[in-house]
Length: 407
Ligand SMILES: [Zn+2]
Image (cartoon, rainbow, N blue to C red; front, side, top):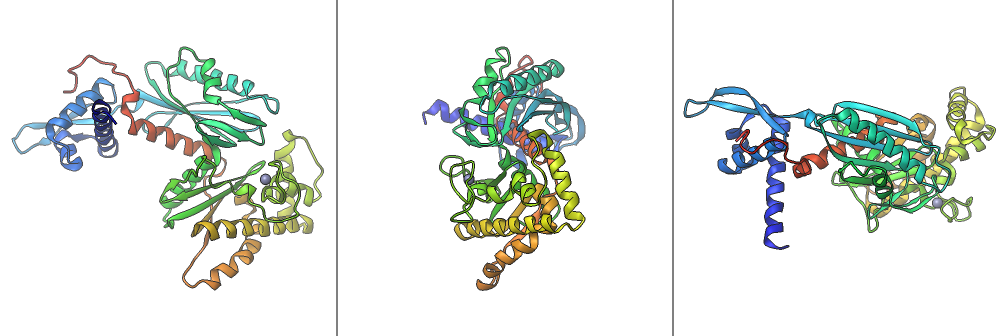
């Protein structure tokens, strides 16, 4: 890295350090920031001036007098200055949630996208329309970043393959940007299961769950997705596709899978496989929610075919978790999505599959937790990532006030 680039990097990282501190501890004084961050007082003063010019921090009155007897001017984050836009693409919906820097929701927009299988353009157009509406609402607030979660593998920022949508090698960010020539805001495309996994991971930690180093996340909606979290971070793998547990083969001669292989976990746990095994009549994609409700009703009523379907799915899921644990030494699995509702009927079979590993190797535990966020998990994760991006890169927000204010 050349010297100017390195220096810009140091400046961005110091700006982020100061912004994060004020975000977590404000209102606070410059002396407090210097003591806590280890930055020189003059450097803190310069960083605060820069953040104030960007409209990210402001004066918040006077605190108790400092060592020299002068009242200390306090600082706080201007939460409304930046909105982050979180978008979730499902097989039929666009869900948008805009949040301010405090994480509070300031605008939502849910709409159907009517994109035919294999064609991302109608979905990109609906995302752009929702974002344009958000820009109108935002007024003087800056759009810091747009993060779009898709149900598919994301490779180098592009949707590599979204099986359920029929998208292959799709530059969704470019398709959306083409409709938004006047919106200057970075766009990041991410995998939805990774976002839900992160959100559930943090929500469970907040409830006191002590996660081990390596955690595997498995979720089911229309299909089965997953994620691998190592040391609190999503492990991306060589191509951004790590943790795709849905396509772990659990049977050598199992049913053909949409991915081209045979016997994948997805072929046993996806909703259609379960409803078919339970004897629930095939419906259209639109009736997915009705089919799931019927399956859940039969499970609660003790219907034998429904429970047998879930038992088979539990064995498949247990086998896949065992495979992942064997390769990665994961110490915990988090179940998300519909798997949470089905956990009472899946768990006996999962436990049966894991029993060998749990008893054969002394002191090697493998806990199975269920998610707590429900259908909200993905968007919560996307909001978290968007906010983190702004806190890490305050230079995303342009200078808005004349130099000198706040120095
Ligand atoms: Zn597969």
